[in-house]
Image 1 (cartoon, rainbow over the protein chains, first blue to last red):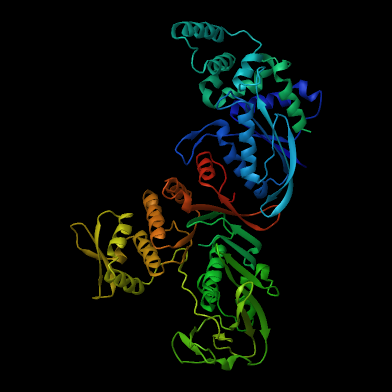
Image 2 (cartoon, rainbow over the protein chains, first blue to last red):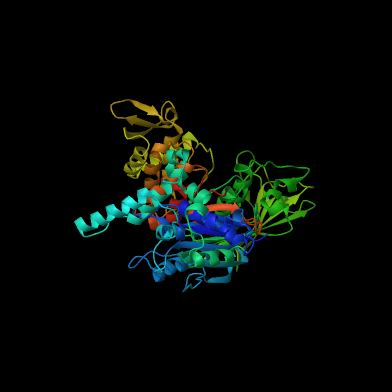
Length: 241
Length: 370
């Protein structure tokens, strides 16, 4: 049976996509089956710079291409979800250009994505054999059309959290004193929010297990009916059927 | 430099083309993925001599001659023993293509036994009808005839003819218009060079003023070795001296020292050529592997040698990629992952870029055919 490989940026992204794909809101609309989710890793490139998150997408797609011939011929659709981020280094145009380039470098075909949610199908050469491959992408974005998973999670957080509320106050204080908000404020806000709902065991090994909170308790701590994630849910439905 | 290779009906290759080679190529993959066979194909297509055909069967694969079923001596060369189909191997350079075609035939009678002149004892016979008198190996395999000269597409064509009726002497060259083969050094896995032969080579290199290169090479393994000499008594042997110590014969040093000397000797003896090394990690401790690769990159460039090496070793591959990260070497390094495609059933050579290999190495991604 044909399968879809969904590539996301981080273990937290993976956990959130798993949450959305398994949530009742999704399955009421359509059955979800056979979508494997993998995430990107950081590494140091030839230029000596550390490549983080979606900057590793070109390398990941090269690895995936070989996997299609080595052990996963049933994967016929590669879907990519990365953060939209913000200009000048991010934003819709930059992020889609990165995705187009990564597909082109790996498969010799530029999908020409101009909008998130698009999909194309091309015949590609996999180890000497021509095969039909579907490619699609989506950008994790908040209501502004920019942002990342953290801005989305903050926007759909549905529970009160003293730690996060206090961090808001601290951020306002820092902004007042320095003229600029805290560095990585949203990331930290989400981190406190998730941690506040983690079990003792999960907190003990937070680096490896905190993302479990998103999958296991996501339905209770996030509003999965929020319009902020309607586009993302719709995309996940399309790649899963 | 060789940019690509096309292989048909040879060993595990039914039909394979691998392109994108650079000066120093490291080939990884699981067992039976075709790594050694790729080196053999490189040898056959670049050397284009009957000796190399014997070498890949008798020396590398330890095949012996079977008088009652002589076809068994040769069928392993052909993909799934399909001797009815020709082997065709070609290598592509930027400006030309060269290669060989190898076919198989069985005949009866003593049709070709009289084409070789038996020189009696020793390793070699002479071909009677060769324009250029050439010695041919008294192979344990026997029954190999070179059939014709230049072909338009595949370069040279050879035919293996086995004869159950006669006792074919050895290798016989039927046509005389084949040029002498170009030496292509091949270092098999676990190979230990003959001490006498390596001593003669080292002596020649020292006389040619290349001792410094040898000493620099040895420094990648042992910084304290400061002198290299060849002694003729009590036996012809390379001797090395570590700082403030006495000369000691090469045989008392570890395998890595002998391997480094052997590789450097082969590069210096055959500049502007190809060097093939199977299981390059043999004997090289992981703490020396980066320096070893740096040496190979430098010497290969200096003497215009293209290297194809195989390895199972994660440490050796990591060391290769770390050296390749050096701006000086990046453009000259290529890692090749070999595996059998579950889609096509063919052996595949997947060219992995430095960045993708770096990504895979640090993140436990697959890159050795798994």
